[in-house]
Length: 630
Image (cartoon, rainbow, N blue to C red):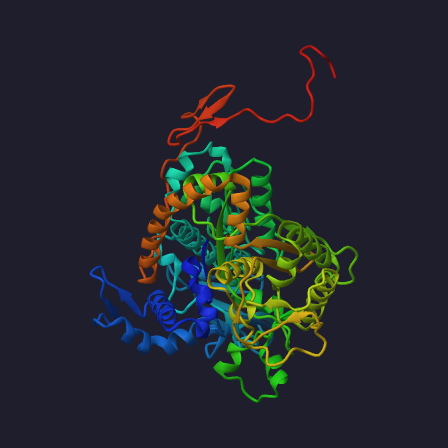
């Protein structure tokens, strides 16, 4: 796994550890804070093993932790938006106005700034080659007057302050989401401890796939955001904005610049369920035998004035007025912004966030052969729509089906006791009044149906906010952390469970909860009826299933091979914790266009790939004899 969200880096469970920080042993707390300080460029580890502060002064790690602790805590997770435009500077905007000119208006303007089509009544005189004088007659004149507007939403889940993913490779006007993609996929490969080119060489190139995207494309100025407002803002559209804005572009970037994959590819956009939709593609490909390795992920960077205003206009976001009303406050402080997201409590809307999360899926035989570190397993992802609806954005009935099926699968695989006593829910938990009622009702009914008395509920958005299509990726990465540390993050903003929440058979906690889990349910309830529930099994359970399927000798051999993988991963994580990141980005390397290929009727051999692509395909449709006519 790899990625980055407001809690930090995904690899090594750093982001998870940030969400359970107070429940960790002192040494683990110090390691987490030191790694975050390095990520935020507040300190850096040196090649000789020493550490320096931001000014380059040698300092002991314990002193750095003490010096930077409060800044790390204040500038990770949900907090006041740090973009100056959302604060004193104000959001740039224009206001339509109609000027009544009592007398003619004369002004001078540079030639290249004058519009091509002028009203016929305007008079233009040349001052010199560059400057023109324009006279507008008295009367009515429609104009756009520049202004700044005070942001009505000032809180978001932002990447740790000081961390900029585009710094780690040759990023040239890439949208933020794509820079986050490059970092997250590189982090995933580093965390795996596997050498990608060696892994790829073991396989037919068509046995690899990438399913990655996001929920709304790249809508910052480097993508479709800049493109769509280019005319009205007076800026030129660039040649990059159109192609880089597409929602499937994270997959395209991984194929072209990170993995060099010629295998399966694509992206499914399903609002807040997008990560699980792509995960489902990968799981089904592997179960069907079409692929053996699949990289799955999403990258969303929606903290822009326009996207925030769109969600605010829907009444979906926790804006300043709503937060003040919720707590009867005159003014909002930084502490108030940090607790804006309150799943299953009295709340007023979700908190938008940015995140990129990637996981590497392998079939079990290949995982054993390569000595891969197995963090968990995904047997299935269930997806169902809502049916008839009044409002396209309102919750519906599909989530009852997805969670019901997921619970049925876990009961069938692991037994009644495991489902009832050793599973937990990773709720969508957006912090909207609608979600707290409808999702808790889904949980309550399914718990009742399966005889579950106290189902633990985790709502990670209380820490990292709602990253749209990447939300379930945040949940899955957190669940893997729970397996590793036997801890469930609490919901620290849950002062009290709201009166309208169905909580009889659910277990909520404000603080981290010790819990040895066999399974987690990754739940998503997206706009438009995009419901999905993924089943995630713990590494311990997965190992028992592998033993049952492949035998003790195969598992023992895997464990021996895994030591080499763990050593490689440990080296990567040590470097990452010291602030040394190497993004895998291979622009323009090994480019092929067709004439270099060797094509037969049985295979295609590609230069640079160890094995050919087989052209032998499965035919389940029957066969007509030669000469037989249709």
